[in-house]
Amino acid sequence: MADITLHHRPVARYSVSFGLAGCYLPDSHGGVYEVTRRTDLADIIREELRMYDLPACLFRDAHVRRLWRFIKRNGSSVAHFSLYHGDHVLAFNGLTQAEYDAAAEDV
Image (cartoon, rainbow, N blue to C red; front, side, top):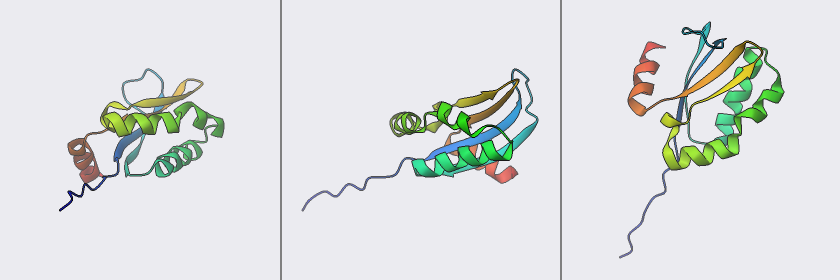
C-alpha cells in the first residue's frame, strides 16, 4: 500500500501597523491576518495601502512572489517587511501560531 502524503498549504500570519517610521508605538493597528494563498496576501497588502491612502506603487516593494517563496521555506514568523512612504511606515510583522491566536483573541 502506498504512503499518501498530503501537501499542506503554507500559512502566513501577519499583524499590520501604520505610523511614523522610527516611533515605538504605531498610530494604528490594522489587525491580524492568516492566509494560505499568495494572492490573498497580495490582496491584503493592496487593501492596507488603499486604507492608509498610500501609493499603490508601494506594492512592488513587497516583492510578494519572493516573499511567498521565503514563507514556504521558513514560515511567516521570520518574514517581516515594511513599506515606507515619506516619514511613515506600513509594517507587516510575521507571527507564530501562538502569537496569532493571542492577537486574534484581542480583536
